[in-house]
Length: 528
Image (cartoon, rainbow, N blue to C red; front, side):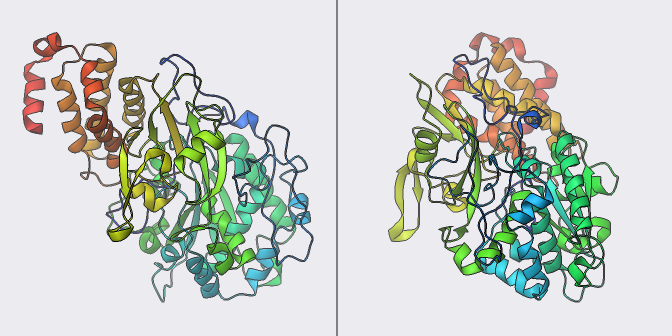
């Protein structure tokens, strides 16, 4: 799920990111039976992770070493590594001593001398948008804390990376934990939070241990705990391990879980976290990557940082590419400075031999699919222009204009060897399993969609099942408490809209009468 803005009409799910394969390994084959699995990443990536850190900071007193990277893991020339500067570094480890040696915690020292409003103002001026999925302006979210608030304020780092197709936050946690802690501490200074939590996936046990060790190191050196660096500011950070539930990426579901309850998302309004969050106190929930950017904004200055990327899409973004490309993996790029074609063909080495692009899911499995042969209109008025899928800039606004979303940055590439019915069934199986069950449309509908696509894949569906499938999806969309409804409905809506003929081609007209029974007829009639 993705970071959700403080408005009830946002269609995206908070902070999710996941992939069923280790990101540095090819996840494809020549047979459709082995596509990229749309399931929560378990511990497969855990064993591959090494250790690393941040970006050069002009204001630092200490000289910052130029990084060298492990053989075969060097950044692509089109990357601009800021958050991932220390990921896969040859000379790096996740210890506090190494982090400080490379200039770490210098921005915290600078932030302690700043007014909280000045920190928030810098984040607003930089134009930082949430990297968890929704792309909501971070500084604006911080500003939603009620004025004259007398309750405790909490900050939560959403590290429940569970959106299929996304695998970025775990590398920060494993290889550069102090970058995350420094970003969190500065953010707590900005919102006057004295207690913060890192809500991490149960499937990241090594990541939790790494963070706990980093927290202890930071406390020993005075960067955390009582009277941080003699400033009089107290802050405690705790690691809370989740239970492997996708719904805990939705910020209010996460908060319910953190309180020890079943993770049923809350209704918004009135339960906007910035006003009524953890223990009904003001709470800021931000993604791992988002919080890391805060320290770099202070290091570079808001004006300089905002020059990275494109207008309204500033900074860098970590894209996680999986599926039918030669070099799947993670790539940190300036937002909007790289097109879909450059990402797939130049950075990822293109498609496999003899294959053609069929579709791309650009923002994690909940994003609407884009057909390879579509044309899209971006821009407005005199600036409007038609582009192909290869020319789509990888930024929030362009992907939204093309009918999808940047989401959590998980780019899933599908070539012409993949049956669309299998791809959709894979996604539907994931969401049917992950529904929390609070809302009837989602609880029942996600399972219905999975059962229908089960039949399509098995060759036991009738052509009318495709219409029923679409009807079920549209009766989930917009009818649930949280955005999980849209997350599970949008894939079906977009795949049926764009690949209807192929899906119908996988059905059997002779099954039409065999599949109908009184219960099915009644249900179908209610969907009309």
